[in-house]
Image 1 (cartoon, one colour):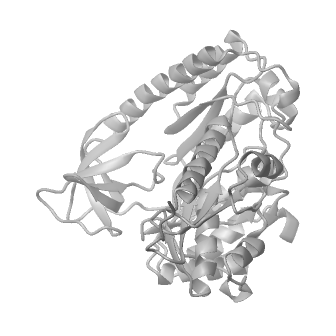
Image 2 (cartoon, rainbow, N blue to C red; image 1 turned 135 degrees about the horizontal axis):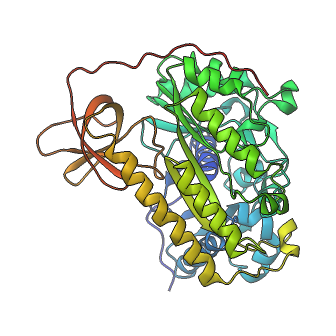
Length: 449
């Protein structure tokens, strides 16, 4: 028997997948709020919008299960309407319409105006840069470009997001000022490929100029770089990072593998030698930089010897942060033409080996931090601890700094100087200090390559 919802005309936006989806959901919610709609994020509402991920098998499965869960709620009368958007919907809309017809409507990644119309709202161009942020108040994602022009063999993102399209610097500065006015202190720059930024608009890689402009925004204290592509990396970015205190000494640069033969098959446009040289240049020019990377194990044809080459390289490079994924055989990608010949249990074993090595490296690097003083931002209170991060740590994926909350009060969203008293594999334990020396940054010029 159908029951009436007590939350009439409240729109619940549910976000799955990566930070780019978080950003898109925030833009959608900003538009809905600008239309005077009652909108919430992952709370009760009688109208549900699911922003899906379609990147790899696990993400697709989670998205489908979430759709089915809300369709069942609709059938039970607990919600009135279910809409689906995002990458899964972009990639598999005809299949989804056939298999899950009880969804009211499916929308792709570029169909925001149509989705708004279905929600009885208008797309308002004047709301450029206006978002209803869902992250803790002190940080926000800033998407500087959409889509990707890279030909990576294993990746379906261009199928779902289209080609690379940079957002103009002036629009991003405006958005950053809006975020700062709302209390955001840390910008996390995201895109499918940060290092490609500006080629379409300015006919050159222009990430360094964007960083210089964002650093001038009053109220912003940290600017963090995510998802840089190694091939053609603009080295003038390191110059800005070195001399501009607001640019975190941190970079997320997914490298995927180190074996040259596999890198060629992956269509990464680089070699083992070039990749290792790039990392050494990073550490030469910005010695204090924390480098985060992600790797893929079990790519088609990966031999035990090729895996061991990567394993030994991980031990040698001693990344500050590292994630490892098992290869997912994605239809309509170039690699789908290859035989997915590494058994799943072998893939998982290889991933486990990499992460065991990284756990030990992380522990050793963290032990070196005991007694040192760091600037941290407090993200939240959890149990008996305030949970913070250094400039070397991004939310959700990196190390955290735990500070005893039973003996001291710290304000969420504020920065503090803390002294590390103990360390585990992926956590630091610290206590606040009243005064701490501030690092001196010397200006260093680096030629672009």
